[in-house]
Length: 229
Image 1: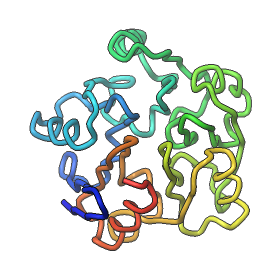
Image 2 (image 1 turned 30 degrees about the vertical axis):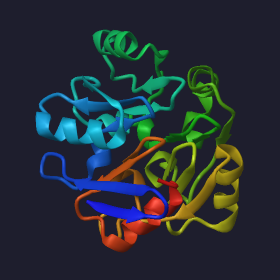
Image 3 (image 1 turned 135 degrees about the horizontal axis):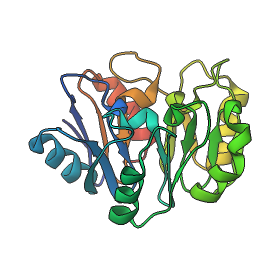
């Protein structure tokens, strides 16, 4: 765990999930809740909850523990893959009090195709046909974008309401669009010692962050600055 002091304590917790440093594949977070998969050790759930200052909710999507790629969420709503079961949707609605909607698209990994905070939504062009559902649930303006030729914008861009981290090969125009839509500063970053798919190795609330165990000290310093933790 890295602790930096600049008038206040800034804390980044690093850990693994199921012996993997790709923690973003298994977790999804906003400023109130962290969604965790069934079977995750209570000690890990407690660390996540305490460090991010959020309430843990155990869930699955389509019976899968890979929550990151199957969910897009901000503080206003939750979008889930069409693989989600009705019982899982009801469970999330009851425990979060947020609108929860299934995205009816042939592309099931919507968490890899949408990046959002409360100010805006960056979505893949592959989801044009479900634009209105995305806007209605996440309650923010939307912009469709590719990042460095990739459609998987949710895998390449992570933001909270204070900052954003983007794929290191994103060009100036892509970064400018992300800044304009999300209304935060967006900076190139990596996780887990050079992995460019930033959402695979980090979860952020508006107050704290947790990164994959392999994330280096310099990467943690960059991320703490990016998210103003």
